Image (cartoon, rainbow, N blue to C red; front, side, top):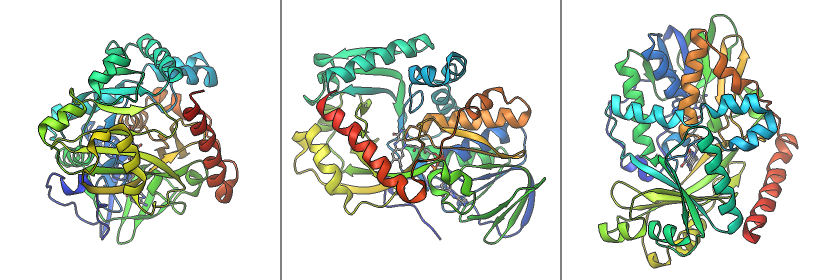
Length: 426
Ligand SMILES: Cc1cc2nc3c(=O)[nH]c(=O)nc-3n(C[C@H](O)[C@H](O)[C@H](O)COP(=O)(O)OP(=O)(O)OC[C@H]3O[C@@H](n4cnc5c(N)ncnc54)[C@H](O)[C@@H]3O)c2cc1C
């Protein structure tokens, strides 16, 4: 049995009736591999459409990044729309731009429809540490407004100091259509909604093999699923055995999070009065927010190649105290690490491994909203309308330079370069 990591989320998760382990041979329309947001969103969209869906999770629902992340509903993609336009052309930018706020909408719809209790709070801040970053945020505002986001506001140094009680920032972009959630409770709520719509969910059921045939045959340690379609949604936790092709195009990376002891309501409110979530604009960014019970949840740092850092607290505390020196001496109750999946282009990778085997992965650290979009797009594709799915599938998927052995040092060197530029403000 593989249980959740030692996170604040696991400790404060909503109780649910556990899902069984698959121990027989069954058939269905669609078999989804992975119980993170990509798999859950896909399975829920399909179950709502009337498909007979089976979801297989190797550990617990939300065991991977979806149950460990910063909980920030960040709109758009890990590369912004101007980069998409210059790299892939105006048609790709138009298509992807028209979808860049949809993932957040899907999450809000689901919370409302299924009454998911996950501490949703609206509003997210992108904070600038230097004038160059602020200029980029101004451009981002213009770009997002061109694609219909009317909920943006630029904040100068005085205004951001009123939103976040630190003197570190020269300005910010407030996105009122962003926000934050308890991510594991969202995942659990979505799994329950799949069950409610007649889908079958299995935990502790690692997939060991996917036979590419029609129908496909998906084997687990103790059972088997015969399905017309398969959706591979294992992301950074898939490993390189089940579908080695997917591993070659991506790299798992670890990022670390700590959560303080509960703060008094006054102290919590003094830090972030309007309870927005915050991420900075550095390449190796800090991200933080208050939880539903007034803790400060603070993440940052990247370990390329997904090794666990020796001591999460040692890594994150200096960052936390640099932002909020007034919290010196605060106790840390929870510390954990989680893996996201980086792609070379930093764009997500959607596609087909064969006619009836689909995959979506590689959100490069910004996946809470895009995973939800991915699930809707694959459900449209299976229904026969693949135009929006294919807008992503057409983007090129590059292998990491250096192959399995050198991709980690090469990428770390690249990150060190961009990090130095951030520190110098150039
Ligand atoms: C610490 C951290 C902080 C982050 N913060 C943010 C944030 O604030 N905002 C944001 O937008 N993004 C954030 N991200 C990224 C975001 O969480 C991910 O992009 C997103 O959750 C990916 O969802 P997923 O379903 O594709 O993958 P995962 O959530 O990793 O799910 C994959 C699932 O597949 C299962 N699986 C793997 N292999 C198999 C198999 N063989 N058989 C069965 N099951 C299998 C795994 O157990 C896992 O549960 C963060 C990521 C991390 C790690």
